[in-house]
Length: 187
Image (cartoon, rainbow, N blue to C red; front, side):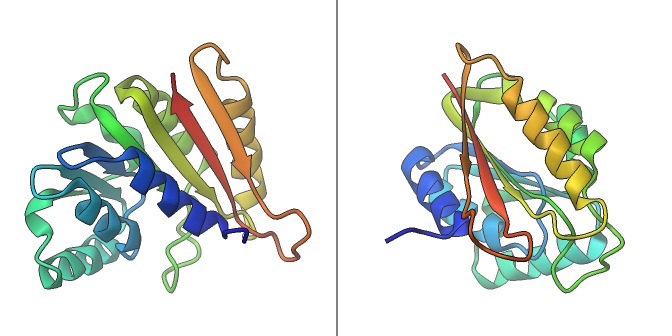
């Protein structure tokens, strides 16, 4: 049975992230991926989560507190393009997860942008350990979404094949701009 792009993303995370790993949630949102990542990395691992919206950070912090996983997560109220401002060593990240678009049930005028997303991706690539993944859920059925989609696709297609494998996972017969996954694996 075919999986949705979101379920496939989660399956890839379970396959590639281990206890004690360091991972990035580049767009914390409502905390769903943050909680999943905190569970997967175990008590010795670390999740570094970014979001520009205080509401997203607060909601995620509350969910982490309820699940007693807050000690594994560092939440940062800042854009993911500032990832290099935090002391993360090169080749130490097992995975980075992005959900492009806007915060579900939030202000739809606050969206991820092509410039900051590409800047962030460029900064995260050297942080990946060999076999590390960047998983990008591309939601593009909103104003500005098509431009970001094209920028991210162009960026991913330009990555050197000898250094990275890039996969696009999508249903192509669905209406209303179905989201798709871009997976980038460092060789």
